[in-house]
Image 1 (cartoon, rainbow, N blue to C red):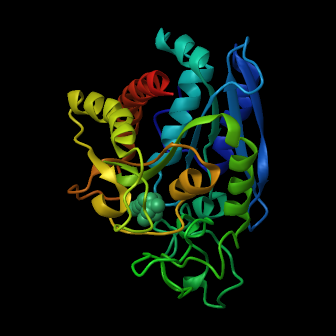
Image 2 (cartoon, rainbow, N blue to C red; image 1 turned 45 degrees about the horizontal axis):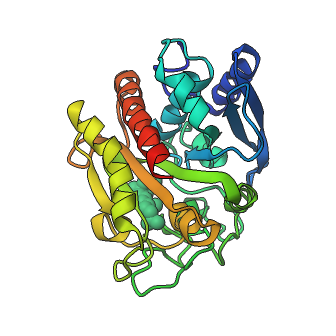
Length: 317
Ligand code: 0X9
Ligand code: ZN
């Protein structure tokens, strides 16, 4: 309970995962997918029904790619709590675990996240990782991890990344230059044959986005299918008074190459790959600074949308 209504620190997230590991009635595997630039573990959790089997289809979820988007790891914590502990006695949970294994990386950018809990200019609003190799100026540390994945990296006239280390969207010297993206890429590839759906949680704006992000000139195959599965979430959220914008990433938001969603679709080969921009709404004055008192309602409302998404995905894969 205490884990779900506030923004957790990095150590609190690790403690939460250990707690889940020892208290869950279902099959749990907790571990690290590797180390961040500063040497922190990047935790993962796999949640499976007790009668699961190797190679069962998986929903892969990640969060916390951009460190200032605090509602994103909070959403991952909610999902883990719901699936592994089910303290609300949600009758859908058994079905969700029957349908899919769930592989969740709740904090892709632990170094940046720790940074956002520090004071000063480069504190709360830090977005990138904390790589110090590309600049000696602390204001210019870090690579935008969502510009660093290896698909169409830096490869369009409007790729939405920067080659300037001081930029918030610095894409790095080459794709997968960063330990965090490399660890994610490896994990994704090693699960490639059974990932049925992928969602990367970000904030803010209330967008449900599918590829391609790298260019607005390239249409995606199967767009109607991607749209249809996502609309299960969007329609459900509308009934809860959250208006989401659904569409191709580059056209609906802006072009940006090197994102995790494009990599999952383009290289890992997962058809249903998405990025979700959680609340607040794009017109909200809060932006990334969603007040802590909103956390509980936002994540539990969004859980309803995620359930609808999973059931719809099951019908279409
Ligand atoms: O710019 C981003 O990386 C994401 N928006 S955010 O405000 N959270 O930074 C959108 C990424 C969408 N996906 C791709 N462009 N591939
Ligand atoms: Zn983001």
